Length: 105
Image 1 (cartoon, one colour):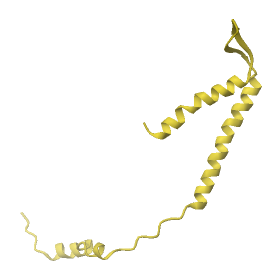
Image 2 (cartoon, rainbow, N blue to C red):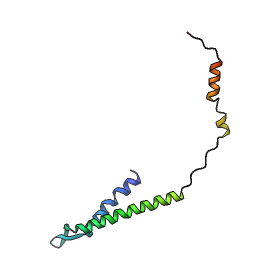
Image 3 (cartoon, rainbow, N blue to C red):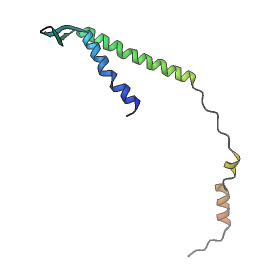
Image 4 (cartoon, rainbow, N blue to C red):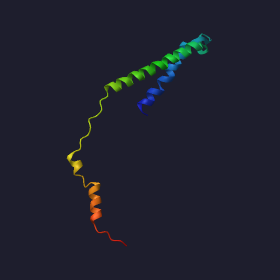
């Protein structure tokens, strides 16, 4: 499992659960123990989730702009001496085949 899967799957439910819990209007209570939420403030939940998602989109945009500003393309690769002496080119092979005697069956 790579780090992207771990960082994407663990905090998500915890953060969205915290957003939902912070927008609860009526909690279930039995014998002094707080249970689950019964009624949420829908407008507040929508606004908090919008702000949460927008903040990550803004951070993504910021990091993309920083990456584009910091990127320097690699220098062009110049041909090396061993690349030029690797063998004959196609034009040399074509000339050799044309000048050779070909036996026809």
